[in-house]
Image: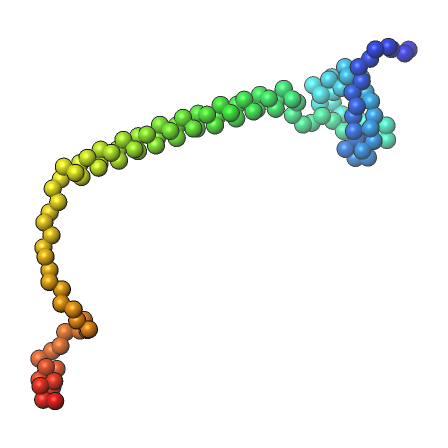
Length: 124
Ligand SMILES: [Zn+2]
């Protein structure tokens, strides 16, 4: 029986890369059922991958997840920023303790000379 006006779907075999046509109706059924079928050379295959519908659903879910993550991150960073500002204010309120001024003598050596050393120096 020859059917007119049948929508065809061009399929490429992943094994032998042979192009063959199946009816679009049959194609849709295979996609939904993930049933295995064979190319004219007998290579078994199936639409095990995700359908466009599934991919779209996954994308929407991923987008929603990322948006949620973004919102959380923004909320957290705002919180950190507020806390930081509070700490800054507190710091300004607290008077800085006066630093004790120390006179630092420029010296070539950090090693303290003992009394005996000084005596030896005087002898020279
Ligand atoms: Zn094949």
